[in-house]
Image (cartoon, rainbow, N blue to C red; front, side, top):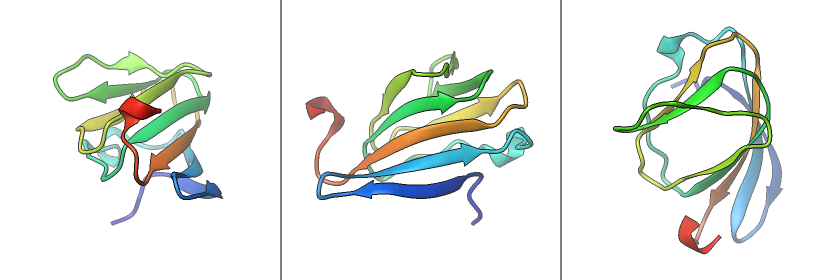
Length: 102
């Protein structure tokens, strides 16, 4: 399965892996599927306009630059591109700790 982003590992330690992800402005809705992750995540939006995140049974909300949000492991979610700009996010993928203790 091909992932809809480019990813660069920035830091790896015992607690988490920190990566930078870039999503292309040309991604379609079909490319951005509902999914769940195997680990807790902390996400910070670095750049991009009119991108949204949606969690299961919730309305989407805009991912503005500087916004940080948590994605608990095994939580259904997806991103939505409304404006056709690239999106760059920093993701901390936690290895041993849950998000309640960050």
